[in-house]
Image 1 (cartoon, rainbow, N blue to C red):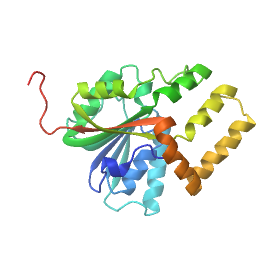
Image 2: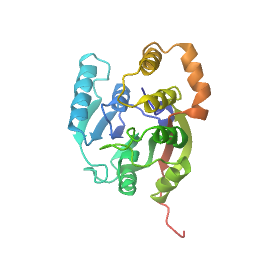
Image 3: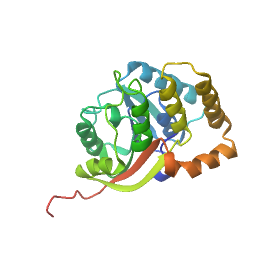
Image 4: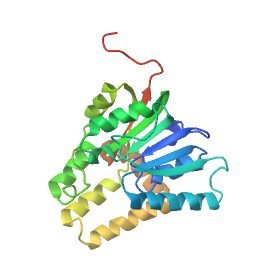
Length: 243
């Protein structure tokens, strides 16, 4: 389930791609398959182990070019273990809402991105997320949970403040918003029949990609997409305040 549009991010073979807060690696896998040199970073050793396992499976299956590489590194997004200007593309998907000092993490994105490089930052969209918070404290008030809800213009402003130019916005996963509203309404941990039924629909959508759900999501994404995606560019010449 990809939140980022790889065509829009222009991920190409041979590029160095950084997947921040990679989780179990869903965005890493696609960049790897496209021939990039991918570094996946997360704080969770368990998630990184899963990412490594699946990258090895992709390699064994011959699904990635022979010269592509994929590495998983445990790290803190506020203090990345990489030199300045070391990546052509950066993905930070559904991670900033978990980080208390998001300003430090955003500054690190800018620092390690090459001049002229592109980034995609995704977070839960404000109003679908607000519904989840209103329905259930358990949804977000837990260790490692969501600690803030962003408005897109607020996030764009934070990214612009470190020198990243906002070039466009998308929305994704509209069909997932009702699923989370249902889970929050009946209880996040409760195994309710209505939630199981809706989950089956989502699995069908992801595995079979039927035309009816693809069209529905295309129409609904601008209205109720669960995620907002900001596309950004680091200018080749740094902008100076007052220039």
